Every structure is written in structure tokens, then in C-alpha cells.
Image (tube, rainbow, N blue to C red):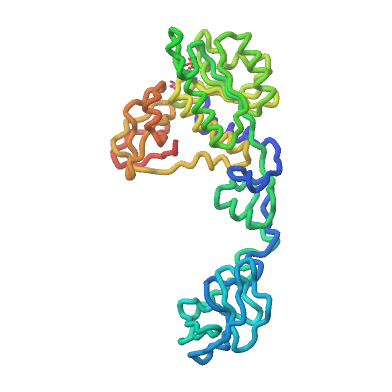
Length: 395
Ligand SMILES: Nc1nc2c(c(=O)[nH]1)N[C@H]1C(S)=C(S)[C@@H](COP(=O)(O)OP(=O)(O)OC[C@H]3O[C@@H](n4cnc5c(N)ncnc54)[C@H](O)[C@@H]3O)O[C@H]1N2
Ligand code: MOO
């Protein structure tokens, strides 16, 4: 049995992107850049006004009040085509090109207008209200680095670079196999004695999508080795990552690993000294990675959060740390000493402190939905009093 940190290090070794593709800016949100975004234009492209008002030459306001003749208008998208001389100004709007000959914009609130004459009663302040060409970025500037997750802010910069598309890492194809004779489609559990709703694969699929995967297949399998083996072989051929739920322990029908043997399963790790989630395992079958999650729903979702999220971060070209951002937070109540397995308690954030949820059973589904944090407790660490700091991870 390896430690949690050793298991995370193994995840880091295997979690590599599987190629890249070009997508339009429209499709790029939530993807990760496989090549940098380089600006194709200056921004702004020319000197533009930062205010609605009047563009003029500073020299014309040396003596105030000043009366300048309005010789035209400049709008964003339709600049002033003419020329502006001494004693003249141009009506201008925010984002519009500043005409040649002007080096300042005066806000319209500080200007009185009489027909074609603009009257400037007082000396303007220091602010010229002109955004100089290229002051945001220049053509050729690298705006976003390779590996950048295209969040809404990044997408703005990518589009502003005036490029039609970007190169991003391919979304890993994920196939989820849930095992167990007892499992039934939600809504149909009572139609069969001893059946329960299959719940885990839905949470695992949601998490896989959240971390950038494309869930291309979902299958519910009976505990029958021949059928499981053929499902395992075809999932391993079709997917980059196969996730198996259940059958990870030592029961007589726990076939999760055995089902991949004919597909050439090589284990990376099997069993981690953690609670919950001890039976979690990782392997390869041909080109595919295979992640085995315990069947107990809380164990499955805790191990998915701790291993699937960083695995997909790496497979989509992100840093693994993006998925494992631990933060210190104070405890609401004392925490008993930890046993020999590293423990990940389910907890809630009250706004000021961390409170463990009441039901810490690894089969819990109601308490699972209440928890928004995991609290990490190192093996054999001593009791902590209320107010003591613990490491937490958004769950
Ligand atoms: N003798 C031992 N028994 C067990 C050990 C052990 O070390 N020695 N480990 C325990 C631990 S820890 C866990 S966790 C479970 C994990 O077992 P499996 O991965 O083999 O899971 P199953 O037996 O298939 O199922 C466990 C439990 O979860 C329910 N389940 C399974 N899949 C789903 C699903 N997709 N949706 C909803 N619920 C699911 C299943 O009905 C069982 O109740 O083993 C312990 N035993
Ligand atoms: O993973 Mo099991 O506790 O961890 O029920």
C-alpha cells in the first residue's frame, strides 16, 4: 500500500495530454492552450478617446475661456475623416479615434455648446483622456502562455489578439464502467428485489466534464466476468481513460481489475493508505489509463476529487496543482487524532470555520451532498483543538 503523496506523484507521471487541435474562439472556453496566443494587432490600434467629449489641441486651451469651432465628429467604428486645424475641435465619443492634430479630449460635462462652437470655460485638468495606440499590447506580444486555462478572462484576451482560433489540447475521451448486480437506472430500483439506484457514475461523469474530459461512454455491468472482460476491452480501445466504479475490494465478485487482465492491465498502484478510498487503483491497458474507484459513493467521490481531477488536469495540459489547491482554515470543533491511514473528512465551510459533516460513513450520499470541503489529516497526527488550522480542499 502506498501513501497518498506517492499516489499523487504517480498520477503526475502518467497524466500527459493526448495531442492537440485547433478550435475557434467560440469553442475555446474551458480548454487549455497548446500554443501561446500572440497578438496580431496593436491594442488600441490607434490613439482613441477615453471619454465622450471634444478632441482638441492642448495649445488651444492655453487661454480660457476658449471658443473652438466644431469641424466634425468621431465615433468608435467611424472616425473623423477630415483635418483639424488651430482653433478647431472635433466632437468625439469613447473608443473613437483621436483625429490628427488633437492631443487631448475634454469631457462633455466641462464644455458648453452654442451651435457649432464649443466653449471651454476653465483650464482642463492633467488627464488627457487619450488611450495611446498599443498601450494595452502590441502586435507580436505574447498575451497568453501555453498551458493557460481559457477562463472567461483569458477568452477576452484571446479574441482581442484578433486571431480566429487557438490550438488547444484534445479533450480526453473517458468511458465509465459501473459494476455491480445490484445497480439499477435511477427511477427503477424498486422494480427489482435487492436493487439500488446506480448513483456514482453520474457524479463521476459530472466531475470528468468539469475537469475538461469528454465522457464518450457509460456502461453498467453485471458482476459476470466474461461480459465484463469484453466491455473492458472495448472501453480500453475507444477511450483515453476508463474509470471503473466498484469491485475494487476483495469480495468474491470484485472483478474490477480481473476484467482488464485480457486487455493487458499493468498496475501503476493498487491500494492507497487513505480513508476513505483505500481500494482505489490506477493502471494502463494498452493505450488507455484505467482508474478504479471504490464502489461506496463517498469513497468514490473523494477518490475522484483527489485522483481523477488532477489526472484530468494533467491530461488536458493543466498543472496538477490546479486541481489540488490546499488551503489552511480553522476548525469549528476539536478533531480527534488520526489513525495510520491519511484521512479526508467531509466538511462544510461556515464562512469563518470548517465544520465536519455529522455522517462520515464511506457509503453516505446525503451527507456527501452537504459537504463542500475535504479536510486532510496526516497519518498519526495528534488531536487538534477548535480553532486549530487544517488543510482543506474545495470538494
Ligand atoms: N474484507 C474487506 N472488505 C472490504 C474492504 C477490505 O479491505 N476488506 N474494504 C472496504 C472498503 S474501504 C470499501 S471502500 C469497499 C469498496 O468496495 P468495492 O470497490 O469492491 O465496491 P463494491 O463492493 O462494488 O460496492 C461497495 C458499496 O457501494 C455500492 N455501490 C457500488 N457501486 C455503486 C454505484 N455505481 N452507485 C451506487 N452505489 C454503488 C455497493 O452497492 C456497495 O454497497 O469495500 C469494503 N470492504
Ligand atoms: O474506501 Mo472504503 O472506506 O474507504 O469504505
